[in-house]
Amino acid sequence: MRVRQLLVVAVLVAVGATGCDSSSNSATSTTRGSSQSQFCDLARKDRAAFKGASIANASPAQVKKLYESVASALDQARFAAPSAIKGDFDIFMAAYNPFLKALAAANYDFTKLTSTATRLLGTAKVMAASARITQYVQQVCKINTTATT
Image (cartoon, rainbow, N blue to C red):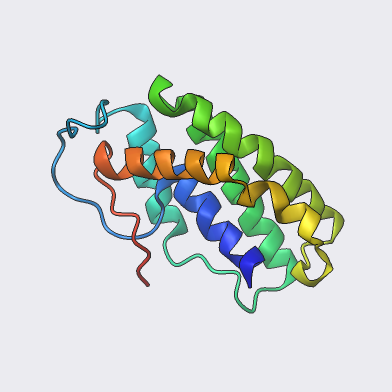
């Protein structure tokens, strides 16, 4: 279900939370920044915290707790985001916050969500911002965002 994929997208945007990280600390020539930055440190911490997170077969209470944790991680990452991706976080959060409100209004029951609740997250602008954040996490923070379980 597409709605369930939104958790994965949010976590990847926040911190590249799944997968493995590389031991290299240097930035690539295509993306500048420091793998030792506060943002990358948060990315590594949150990657570990959300590893294996799933909403499959989760109760509404479990979904609520997980989405609240993701929202907190996103807020911290947005605050720490370097200028190269700060605008991208703003774009993503402008779409993600209405989704969270709609999910809360539906008592964290995905079957009660309308397509309107997820529409903004699927726009080309938000998807492009998400891709740039993911690229930064991969290239600068050296975190592999390929989902593994």
